[in-house]
Image 1 (spheres, rainbow, N blue to C red):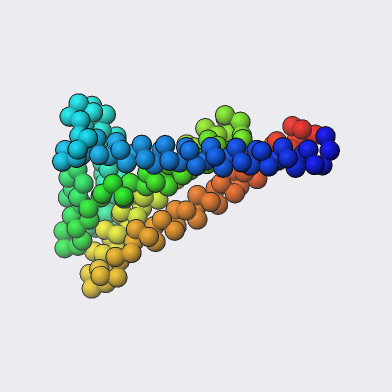
Image 2 (cartoon, rainbow, N blue to C red):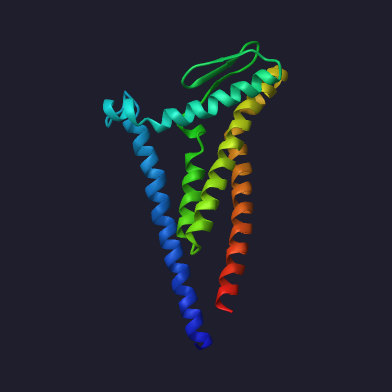
Length: 194
């Protein structure tokens, strides 16, 4: 294969990856937004059957809230919670909305990993590790807000940008994981060709 042919083939692979990344991200992110509307009783698309039997949005909220409350309690605070709220007694009141779930960054991670040309074993492993890492970081964010706002009561107004700060931290972690994953997969691809 000539250098020109190799360059054309690499360009085709890059375009294919970008198209797949874009389409998968739109599918996952918009699919989650649509399912959130299906699971919201006041929504135009609300479906009682799906809300009752397949409400993964509420399941994820609960899976974030319960361990976050355990961590808050480990720091000596008394906290109570329901399906979407955490109240730290003598501390903050936190509401866990759809935007707090991390589904956007999970959608990006899943789209990137599925679009990248890697083995299925490596792809599955990265998906599991990445989604668990995002989940753990999200629990730590909710717990951290509960503890920090409980300790620094006078500074509560300074934490209004916690969502943006969390997104930056999570995307830095995700891009770092992806960098090492791509580097490892690129070595494996070049070793299998040579």
